[in-house]
Length: 443
Image (tube, rainbow, N blue to C red):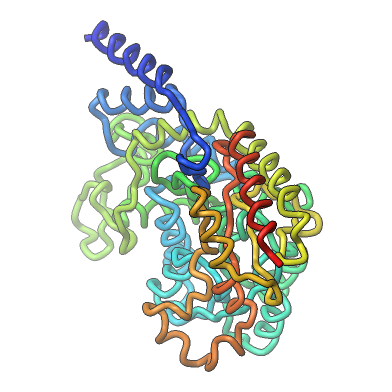
């Protein structure tokens, strides 16, 4: 069998190495993002698949040990998606073993977002309090945040994503968090590898999250992470992820439930409602949880991706700089992205907002790029309150364009291009050619 395994792995290596990655300008798409794998990810995944141990296992635990430092944290839990990471982080705010915030607690969040930042707040029974964003970075308007905090002592927390890797003024934000005793959930799903004043994004929050979706800085197909400096909060998050299970042996020593377990004794009087009963701790539940565990296969791929992060991050910074040069001649028509003072973003994407007085609209430039096979994306949901699923939350705010004018502009005028390592010099040169051609038509 070992010989057969070697043959399988060798054939996989050959297959991956011999694949042709052809790209024809104008015929093939310039993707805005995507996975960047070589044979190592595939071999790691196949070895796990053939091992027979498919669920959370040794690879997942090894990843949990290695990854927190990439967000500047001490502890963390791996989960099956970035969306689940946010759900777990907010669930920890509600948990009696976590922050124990009461139902209905108010959480500030920007009205321009991706649904996975706001949904957990709603799903956990908290009340979102929306603020507008600022140009050109689209981060939360801290003037509005400060006014809300001064006027409403019931606000207990703040949650937002650093926009495409670029943070707001974190010194000012953290001063507000401290002054008003807030819990800060830091969504770093777009910000892996980014810094503010020399400190890693993901290290500012009480809890931070990250995503390993294929569009993100690294990927394991799907996957996410919840990081914290608190061992207590980490334990609560792991429990909520694992059905609410009280036993944490399975995450500290996956696959080993008898020898050397974390608690030292599986069978004990664990049930507070039946103190006379001796019960298996693996089937005692402290939380009303979910099943949001990843496969060990995902973690095995993630461990290989971690080795590539320096190159992946460097490519994003380099490609952003090239795109900035491409669009700089046309900044009279566009709000170009600018790194926040003191920040060093590892840019998730290249964000553009068409100015209101431009002689063209977003549809004109986006259609032109897409017709030339250059992928673009709108800035996620734009104003989330304009969407059918969230209209009931918009009622207290009245006219959305009056209340959130920048969010309105984002919804109609903003879009982005990619920065990932798959944008080769040839593809970037093609983007420049197409962009110059478009602006050659503008009068």
